[in-house]
Image 1: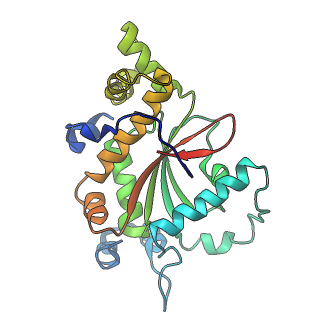
Image 2: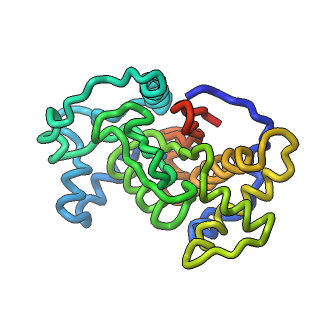
Length: 252
């Protein structure tokens, strides 16, 4: 993922507690194995480490970032690796060892396995419109970190995000949205308010970037599992924006 400096201030200034945000809205192997006793059989099997060696995904966050950046470069240049998806099906039926967890927008044009050119079983993907943190999202990511040994979490926003655009309309025009959509938009509105202070770029692009940064910051502070592993430098939590037109992911 390419680095970018876009002048948008880091939204880490946000003072809301992650627990409060989570209402709305990355390997402790020993602890994980100790807890498998209360897990349903299927989850325990999926979390079990291979016999006689380290997990296949016991790699550094930096190595994961490089692998995903290389994969995204292949995807963007239309040169993906040829894959025989059936070849590893039997092995995947017994366990999973994803190298990264992706908190992605639910937009149908964003497919993380394709975007990063990864085989089935390589990415643990959690999707929700606007790629925002919520209680269920946190629980899913905690499972990936605690039991699957995932070393990296990526919050993946994208250009032309409809959820962020809706939040802008609510902030700027007091737009009224139906159903439960306002609950989702409420988690994005603070990013719009921060982005409004940025002089360069468009409000939509800036809001998308700030929203990603806010979710990254919230996850880094989310107790007990993610914050603990991040503080111990066992995992990393990063953000990126996927460009729908070019296929490239820019790290922010």
